[in-house]
Image 1 (spheres, helix red, strand yellow):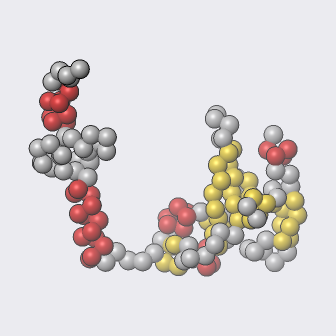
Image 2 (image 1 turned 90 degrees about the vertical axis):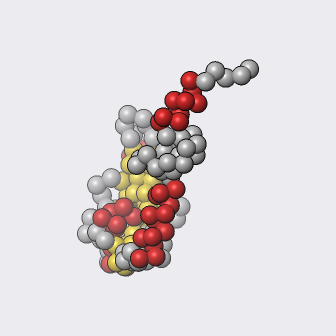
Image 3 (image 1 turned 180 degrees about the vertical axis):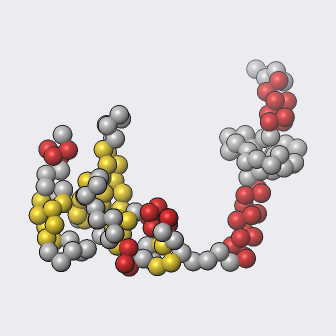
Length: 141
């Protein structure tokens, strides 16, 4: 079915000297199907991060599409050139402190003000004992 939606097209691409077969274009970028992208030249944001890199402000050079067979959904991901990527910026003490404060705020119970040492649900902001107390009380109608 994918061949009907995205036929093979021979076109010039930024990561190769000559034209390459792609699945056409998507948002003006070459479209590649799963397994067709050169792994040593192109990577998604997550793949760059796993390599200790970041896109470095570059725009995507291609789009990867994956069709999930069970749900029938098609997912698109931007691909970046690995050679233009830069190393991830190191964590500074100020960034580390800010991150620690933000994570602590996610753990403070809105009712008792204690830290139960786990991240609280965003729907209630209550620790489990406080949640049980509020759910046991009969609701006034």
